[in-house]
Image 1 (cartoon, rainbow, N blue to C red):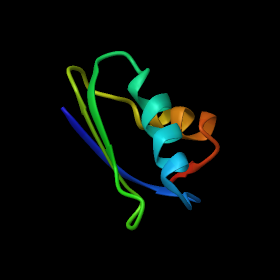
Image 2: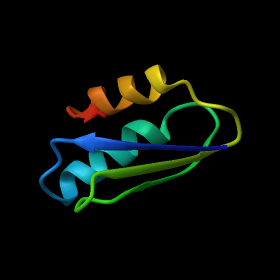
Image 3: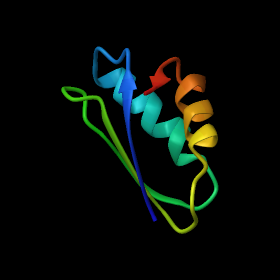
Length: 66
């Protein structure tokens, strides 16, 4: 399953690493790709992910899922 979204507020590679780490901890996640320039977030998971769960993980990192 692929989840796609946009993360707001990232300014550096540390931001990317924080989002990647938090989203990676969700159950079933295989891979997370975050692009600093576009804010793009792509999550590959073995199970469907609820938008609320991904948004909560992004918020835990200190950013907002749009």
